[in-house]
Image (cartoon, rainbow, N blue to C red; front, side, top):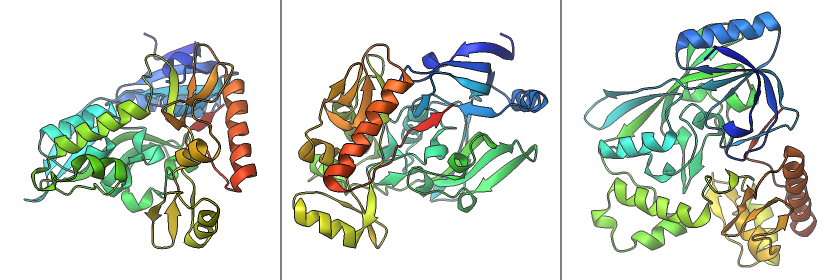
Length: 340
């Protein structure tokens, strides 16, 4: 295969199955590939767009008028820090859930709540992936990148990555940093996060004998009931972010909807499950417009049934945002990345 290809349709490289062509497309499986692709994009004076497993992106119907690079660097490395912890360095092309499974197989703790999340390790820091009370930034030590502006390999410590809820410096400055590897610090001793209702209900009475694999199996079971099979329908997982608001604002909303749940988000804010609003307030579970809809088991998830377009997806998603705002006065935002 040529290092650089032209006019490659991107829809097959996304789990939504939506997207037009890349003017240029390439795969990077080594650092040398990265340098050649960056040099090519600069010679052509074109923007560079990295993608991973395509599970959290929505690509324009017109495609991307630039260079798209699929990051496929392979490998995992283990390095014992001390008697309590281990550094796990994972290269960008590794499948995220295989990383979680491997860590649990090595009797390490910290990633079990993040089981079942589709995509690659290199894309995980971009969104600061999270689930069931754990975010990737909780365990990240550093991220190795190639800075395409300064044209050098760098190590960004966790505090340099500007991690926030479903955000990071990699999302703020798209295309600047090509993620080579992610290093996480994992514990050799059990350190479970199990306060989320879905998990807590399933492990009640088993806390003393709990293993990481038990949390993983619980999470995978929960996800199997809430998320569609991306081999059957198009999906980018949770399409919308759960809204985060001040405790003061939440108390005002709670007066109108006494049963609305929430989770602490720092000392002065709470995170509200948008799925509850979409389901209990708006009755949007399974709502559909043409080939685009909300998943009937988890309305936070947007799905595509058969062939659909970015225009259809965007129009549907904007209508959902508008109706949430009209009824509850809550502003919601997208979790997916829009690429054009």
